[in-house]
Length: 126
Image (cartoon, rainbow, N blue to C red):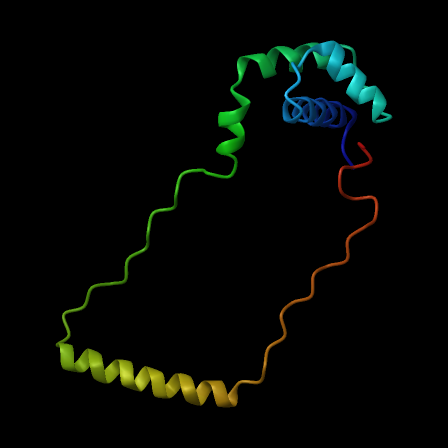
C-alpha cells in the first residue's frame, strides 16, 4: 500500500507523462483535469509543483536515459603463469567433468514466480 503522499506524487507524474506523450503543454490545470478524469484527487499544491518541475526538465532526454546508470566495472579473471599446454589439458578435463556432471545432475526446475495480488500494480491510481 502506498501512502497518500506517494499516491499524489504518482498521480501527478503519470498525468504529466500522459500529457507529455500527447504533446500537450503540462500545466497545473491540465494535470488537475487528467487526475480528476482518472477518478483520483491530490493535495492542491502537487499539480502546481509538478507543472513547474516538468517545465524545468527535458523530458525527452530524461526518458531516453531511463535505466541507463553507470556501468559496473568488469571483473577480470585471475592471471596465471601456467604454460599453454597445461591450460589446454585443463580445459579438456573441465569439459569432461562438465559432461559427467550433466549426466548425473537431475533437471532443475526454474523457480515459479510468486502469485501477485490483484490490487497490486498502480495501487488503484487509475
